[in-house]
Structure formats: C-alpha cells, structure tokens
Figure 1 (tube, helix red, strand yellow):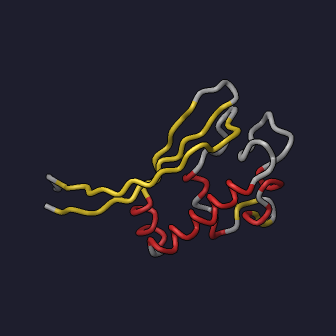
Figure 2 (figure 1 turned 180 degrees about the horizontal axis):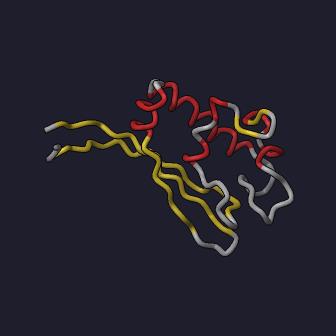
Length: 120
C-alpha cells in the first residue's frame, strides 16, 4: 500500500447566468509532472490570487461577453498573445473558454492523503 499527500486547489467561478461551477486542480501531480517544488507552485498561486484581488475591472475574469481580454486584464501573465511559460498551468487551473465565466469567486486549498489500496 502506498500513501501520498495530495494538495488540490478547488477553484469556483461565477457565470453570466448566476451559476457557480467548480474545478479541482491536483497540484501534487502537476508539480511532479513539471519538476517544480510545491513551494514554487504555491508562490505562483499566491501571486495569481493577489492579481485577482488587485483587479479593478469589475469582474476578475474575461469571457466572450466582456469588453476586455485576459491579456488586457493581466498583461504580466502574457507574452505574444499566450501565457508566459511559468503561467501555462493556468490553462488547467482556471476556466478557459468556458461560456459566460466572468469572475473567479473562490480558491481553496485541500491537503489530504490518498491511499492506494490496489495496484497492478
């Protein structure tokens, strides 16, 4: 039996019709795949949440109904129209291309263990 500690981020966002949706991002698996430390990843998330808090555009995310793009909202994340390499994890971390998403409302961290009870 193998036990590993999983760190997951639970991201909640609001859509134009008032629905809230949730996405779970496994930071443990991401860090392992990208060969980065959990501390480095957590520092990036902290920096990202500070950007969300500092946003003064009314909504802190962009969609097809808004007049401002993500690149205009957060130019520090972009290079030549795409996320800078150190921010590419955002493609999986937050909603991309989801219709009507205009605000990320909550980001929680869940630290728990996952126990493998069978492996072949």
